[in-house]
Image 1 (cartoon, rainbow over the protein chains, first blue to last red):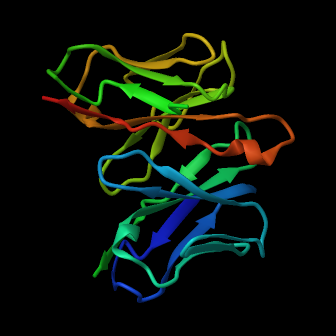
Image 2: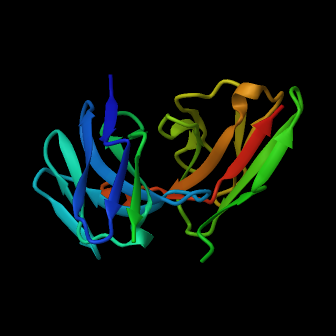
Length: 111
Length: 117
């Protein structure tokens, strides 16, 4: 069964304390892996797309990496405004290319 | 560009009532999607429209119908609402051009929070 698992479910960091979020997947054919940020009461906001193992993308304090079985979202020296839920989704390379979402990691960064 | 817009933002229904959720995008995207988001579960696809004039079932289509009115608009209808349909509903769109993986990215609207009593 196609599955996307994110860990941890929740993470509390102090401002400046770097960490990583994990997204592991078991799907039948990966077309792309997406990271989104979701603030409370808002829709998911697109961050990155990764297409092949070894690929990396960066944006401000965020860096996403991809291997054959998982992706990491590294957060360097986070600030309180980085607090949000981070969603991982996998686009499969079968049929209509369905997007399968994980349940997200809730990140809280304290000043 | 407004991106993806959804109306209404909030709605409360009684069991058995019907309603239509509206979605529009101004990015000239080919594909549009309806998802629901429930606590502890990932976003789940209800219906999608790969291109204007086509619609298809996703993972959880029971109790819903959709209409792709034109390239911009994609509506979701609940014919007889049930408490199990209490959720947050998101519309999304993507360009989806064949042979161009970069156009797979889905962009989401702000959501409609629906409560069915």
